[in-house]
Length: 385
Image 1: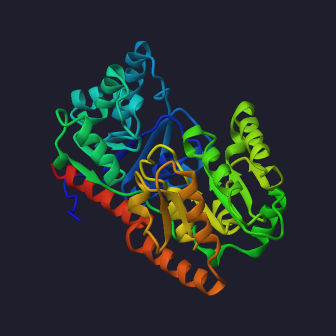
Image 2 (image 1 turned 120 degrees about the horizontal axis):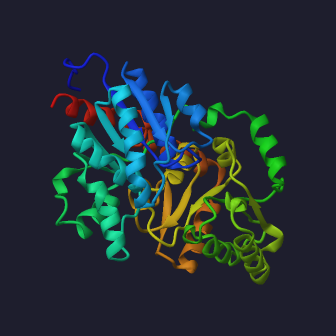
């Protein structure tokens, strides 16, 4: 990595809408921790959230501003407040991780002569002209990071007039292998969580850890599990319990219709995802729209769990077909059921071999350490300019 000789302590400012549970937020904490570990100064600007304390424990200074507002009429006032913060901390690089912060911050960084970087986490498909303009602001940063080859392909396909393929660097999201380590999850944690979630003591468990969002594929998975010949499989929808009551009732109604109602468990999200994944025999990621990346698939593999997903988006990059998981034809419930059947019939010896191979796969290319090192390399390159 290039040495930073012209700045005593570089100041890296990350801007995210809020710091609640999610992949963007976890990545922000991980990068803040890496910045601090390097001896640089980490600053995060957001509009609050449950993970603010994690940022502070990672060594970051946290400033609360309404950088999540999508109202253009409010942007000038927020921009003025943001300028005050950037001047007070002596920002050298501003790293935006979402579109509203990009609209607020990037015109300001250009005017102030501060280097800017954007990380594109979303699907980034322009559904209409307004959405195209709204998305495109993130491409005006000095440096652009895409979280997967799939996201990069979407950008270059839809925004070729705004950015070249060479200007986009791919840095896959990483898994904290110290946290997602089966050897570090005690039996007590697993049993306690199992009792809390009211999971059965016998029979295999298929788990979908995902937000309560229609495109995550909850309904397709209910139909697929219901169609399996094995009738002792429990379907565990972790995170779906945080959804609107109408969404939850629709899932329950489908389970009744398909005969799965007695084997369906719906729960809110958990802060102990490693222990939750240990409860699963198979982890599913049946997103009906391509995932930009899908960190869940990698976390499951790090915990030695086989993964079943639809064959599109980031899943193609993170799952080794027939080696660490199976990829079903997109939105094909019958093929999804076929893949689940293959995963569930793995014997104990096969599962042990599978688990070692899956973890080695994550260690080789998808660790948090690798993600942080590649991001800090980009920071260092800009600090030399």
